[in-house]
Length: 111
Image (cartoon, helix red, strand yellow):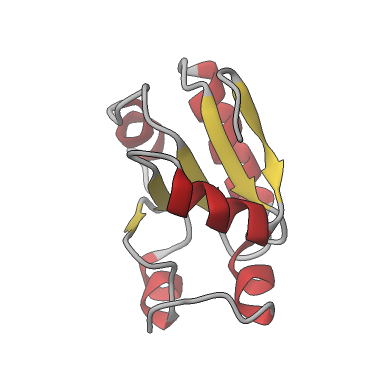
């Protein structure tokens, strides 16, 4: 399904397939902790985009895993994906339209 070297925006449905099918996939929620508490994707790790150590926390992640990144609408997720790409990550997918788009399509969330 995926190729090495892929960092791009993808539909919520495609991201769900990546989460389910790509071995070792990690889900990163880059919203604020308050947004995260309102609901998030299953097994998501919250790394606040606005935290002073945001970039450093991303760069400590394992580079050989696939990642699905999301925020509320997609902008912070896109910026996080670019930071990961520049740090040497090769398989990163940003959820198009973010959490709001994911939830509006009836895809599973945790509250």
